[in-house]
Amino acid sequence: FFNQQGENMFYLFEPLWHVEKMLTLETGGTNATASAKAYRDVLQQLFLCDFSQLESFIDPLPVNHITKSLFRRESSSSLCEESVCSPVVKGVFERYRCKTRRCGPLNLTMASESCLKKEHRVIKSVRVRQLENLRPLTKDPRLDIKFIQLVRDPRAVLASRMVAFAEKYKNWKEWAMGGNVPLDDEEVRKLKGNCDNIRLSAEVGLRQPLWLRGRYMLVRYEDIARFPM
Image (tube, rainbow, N blue to C red; front, side):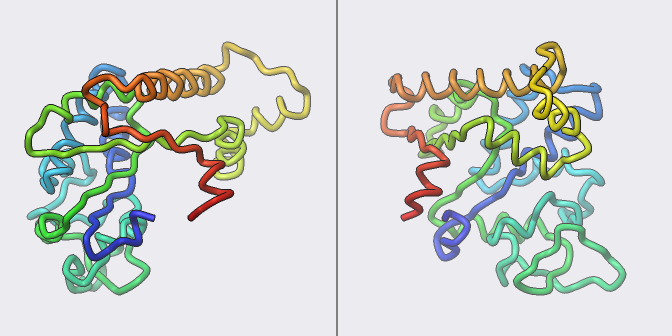
């Protein structure tokens, strides 16, 4: 929905993918406290149309604010608009290139300028583990931020991942046939952790503390699938 409101909406799809990847490579895993702060700081700057912090997590590093490596660029229509579409560079391959028009590598300065002209900015991310981690953003006088928490039956999420990442989740297929799931398996622990984080964030949001009053909406994936309008 937000990705289709081009005239007044600047939409970014999963920019924190770069942050998570870099932190994982540097430490061999993601420290919850360190990653939460990094996610929050990058999001804060992106909502202000400042890509500089995100740039430091993109690998390889952008040159003169130009990158061919932004994750899923084509999933953010705002990054494929004419105003952000630089000339094609011969011999330069962009994995996540725009599908709607032929563009060269992404110029983040042009993206920032386009962002500043839009009335609203929307960022989609699954990497913020708990809503409470974003509380400082509500205190930034430059932002009028709102949160939409999209929740989905974790069994459906798992089923989707088993298809998308078949090799990684091959054990789950065997467990689905045999019904014996080892509770100490790393992926089982991750799934439980995700469920706990969803529940904790929803509990905070539905409790409507002062800092979230008028800023939070809980939406079920299944409801949108059944009644998209």
